Amino acid sequence: MLVFINIIEEEGEVKVKRRENVVIIVILVLMLVAIIGVSYAAFSFSQQGNTPNTITTGSITMTYTESDNKISLNGALPTTDKTGTVRLTAGEYFDFNVSSQITGDVNINYEISAKEVGDGTIDGSNIKLYLTKLNDDGTEEALMVPEVYNVEANANDYTGRPSGEMSLYTSSMNSSESNNYRLRMYVDEGYNPQGDGGNLTFTVQINVYGKAGDKYVPETTQDILEDNEVQVEKTQMFDYASNGSYLESFTQQAPQYGTDPSQITSGVYSIEDADGTSYYYRGNVTNNNVQFGEYTEDYYVYDDGYGSYYQSLESCLEANGGSADCTRVKLASAGDKMYWKIVRVNGDGSLRLIYNGTSATPDFSDLAHSYAVGIAPYNLEYNDPKYAGYTYDNGTDSFAKREVDTWYENSLGDTIYDSKVMGGRFCSDSSGYKLASEYDLNPVLFGGDIEGIYLYSSWGERLGGRVKNSFTVNTPTLSCPDTDETYGGSYRLKAGLITADELALAGESFGVVGNSYLNPGDFEMYYWTMTPAAFTYGDAYVWNEYVSLFNGNVVNSGDAVRPVINVTTDNGFASGDGTASSPYVIS
Image (cartoon, rainbow, N blue to C red):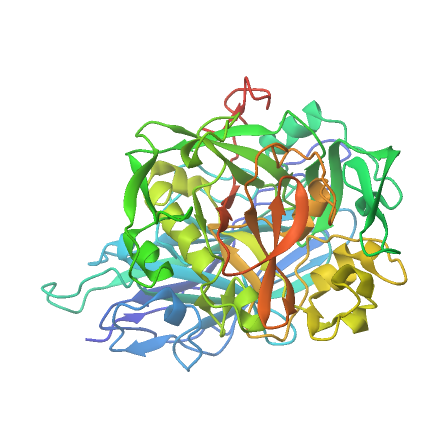
């Protein structure tokens, strides 16, 4: 049975409220983009609309147009995210465009959402939606992680989206632009079609809302900026750890160190990321503690007896060739709260958090009292540069990614807290893969021999300025560089790992002992980043952190797994001031 769904074209709804000396105060734009039907048997568009929906008021014009492609799948069965998110044959995706013409100092906050319509016979919890942005070069940028259909209980007053719809993507525009989007929708792999009788249907309407006004700033961001004066970056600040320590020279076999008190830094600073202005914490700050989430049941990991702890019995056995005596040990008890450190406020207003354990002040007496959820290899194989990627071979998950994903799914993924965790940006920068000599690396660092040593741009271009023959200034970034490699790259994930650039922003510097909030300074626990570092003499290396020593480690070593998530909330912090004794609480 084929399910035919019509595209609906309707006039937008505009509400303009006039006040003295203000031309445009509020614009509420509702554009019904399309109606999309899905069935595990088949789903299709029966027609395409040719007339754009256009709303014009004063100096703002927003337009929606859909392309002439159709979604038409025959025999569509439950599928994996890996397959569903990359479908590109005719009839498996739907493209549309949202554009604006803006003159003057005007900002539009807009949101793309989905709303179930009709009498679907398959539950939305079995349907996944996935939205990407089409770049000029034909590549796709993920705007969300694949998510099952779920609706927001509250309206978004900044964009005009009502309650009862699923938010897919929120952004803003303050200049004329044209954005192309691609939507995919498919039946989740967890759905079992046996015994359902077939021909089940589910239909959603894709809406775009826009509203003029100041760019949306969440109350959490406002609270943080009220509690912290934004500092001004010092010249060459990132060549030093936040305690002023630095590598002085490599004129001898042993590196020489120094300390410059004028380069001691601490507080909140700003830098641009892919979504706007990001505010990051640096140095030995003590007011970026957050309590968010809790373990709803006892949580266990598996000890292999050799100092590593895995998220499942299967991963413990896999990492040990099937021969380890994997013992189940408790990481957390039901009801234990989760504590985090704020790494930064992202440019989109969400908070980037790194796991800090079941206490705001971990004591590191054992794994359960540390800031880690496990200790495991980054990858089991190490003899190819690709194993430095968070994914490799165009999408194969690294061992570390599987451990992080398993922890998230078993801790936050099936709880009420999951709705607050957004599909955030993550970067495994595998760009700039070159011989160390091409980066002008000082050979003294490697005992005089740098042949066979390859570095990535994270080290060679941005974070290793002091280990070069010709000193260069360190320049950490929050934008993910483009790469041509089949490993690493940029992602939208529910959970990942911190990047080497974020460690540098936080106050760490290569090869010296720092004092940033990310590290206790007195406990020997390595933890992984997700940034490739080098490939040396047959070994792949990833940046890691060890007793505040910013360095790299071969990927088959056992380092701590310390998850990072991005949390969004419109209602500010429920309580707290960010200190360890009174953490910010996200309810």
